[in-house]
Picture 1 (cartoon, rainbow, N blue to C red):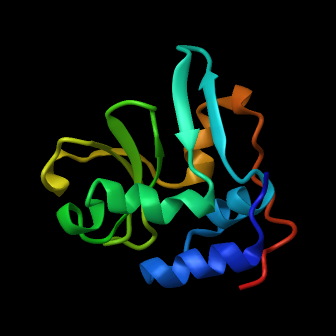
Picture 2 (picture 1 turned 90 degrees about the horizontal axis):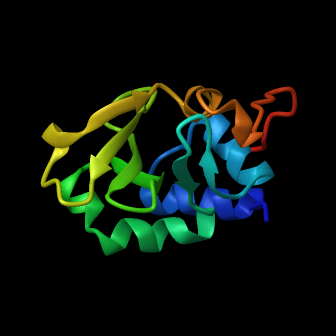
Length: 133
């Protein structure tokens, strides 16, 4: 189920950030993702926009990782997180037990770059139809 632009805008206001365009596009067109992706059958989960506030509040990520926004994970200990301390915000992996940014593993420069690592995910970045602000 895809999210509409109003929900995306409300989430951006809540977190005080502007989501990267490819992530906004993903939320509007896909909404979420939860599947095993070849070749290693890694589990990749990207939360729906409606889940972002609860997910980020549950682990106190905003307090431990100022400027962070958890958008998904591996269904276990690693959380897929935007690092909004940088522009553009890269995606990083953070272990749920980590106490601060020193434990973050830089994953990808963008959501589209991450998903390109898993062509079987079926998601294609198409910026021909920009989303409204």
